[in-house]
Image (cartoon, rainbow, N blue to C red; front, side, top):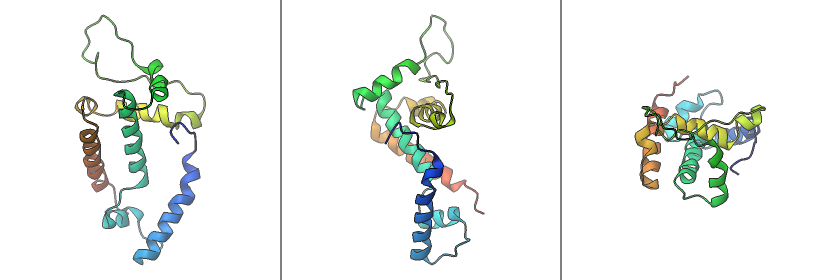
Amino acid sequence: MYGTTVPIKKFSPLRKCTGSSREKNYRSRKNSSRNALYSELGWEPLSIRRERQKLLMFYKIVHGIAPHYLQELLLPFYRPTHSYNLRNADNLNFVIPQTRTVSYYNSFLPSAIQLWNGLPLETKCIESFHTFKNVLKNSAAERTKNVKRF
């Protein structure tokens, strides 16, 4: 499903389905805050889970664990090296591709590159996939604690 350009609006039936099953199972009021219920149940919001899965797949592509055809997609977007000694010369950032449509901008590759470029250098340089996964999980847990409860 990576690389598809399915808009987020298409996932709204999924959110409604999970929301209605949550309300039935936990007898919550229909107008109660989803974020409050998610934190009460120990669930992460769907957007954070999607971001984490994108970053995990992108890590596999960057570190050569993913299939070869996915690694080939990334080659044109790696920043070329140059002879200047700059502070950000080797920060493992990628160029976000120019997009003409919003659907392509929201697809896997541009959005994953944008998320990857936002990570700290120490996180990008982690050698073990499981360690990287745990770091992302812990940072996602911190972000869900900081989500406003309405």
